Image (cartoon, rainbow, N blue to C red; front, side):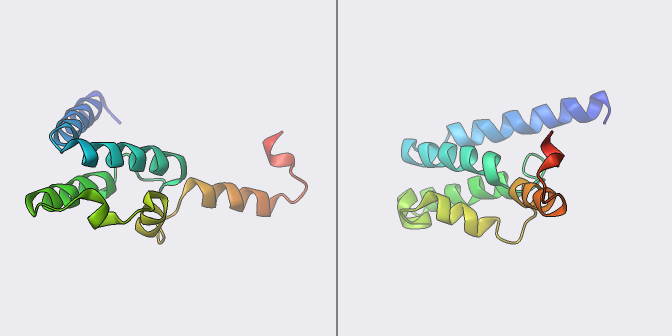
Length: 109
């Protein structure tokens, strides 16, 4: 990854965060919670993948339709996030695989 890639990535991230800041307060709160959850358990390609921008697109559409954020995702943010990443390789999967390969638990030592 070169300097230009890093600069372009930062530009894209700043544009993404500007879109998030433009959302209504309830949407922003839910987005931040989803983002925290997904960075903990989400897909390996989360920072570079289409998931976070896709969520913002979805939220912008919901806002345009006059819907509340919970009308879109339901009351369980974690369950909604889990459903989004159910077919993606996650850090939890990688950890589980490392435990499965090393039943004695010596991989972390």
